Length: 159
Image (cartoon, rainbow, N blue to C red):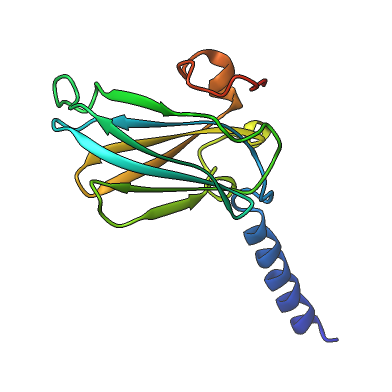
C-alpha cells in the first residue's frame, strides 16, 4: 500500500470511528419516570405510550390545565404511572398532542444533553410549549440526585 492510500484510509477510518462515538452507544437504559408538562396558556390533552423491548407496558391519557401565566416559565405537570420494572431495557416513548400525529423517541438514543456517566438511569419529561410540538427532554441521574427533578420518578430508582 502506498503512503497516500494509507493516509486516506487512516483519515476515513478515524472519521468513521469518531462518528460512532457521537450519542449513546448503549441501546438500553433504566427508565426512571415519565412526566408531561404544559407550558402553554391553554389546556391540552397528551396521549402517552411507553414501550419496553417492543411491547406496550403503559398507555395513558393526560389532560393538563393551562400554565399559570402563559409565560413559559410556569407549568402544569403530571407523572405517568410507573408500571414497568426497574431493569435496563429498550424504551420507546410515543406521544401525541390533542389527538394529533404520534411522535416517538427511543430513550437511549436521545441522551446528548445528559453527561455520559449518568446515562444509565433516565427520566423523560414531555414538555409542550407550542400547540404542535412535544419536546422529549431526558434527565439523567445527575439531575435525579441533585433534587432538581420532583419526586415523579419511579419508587425503585437509585442513582
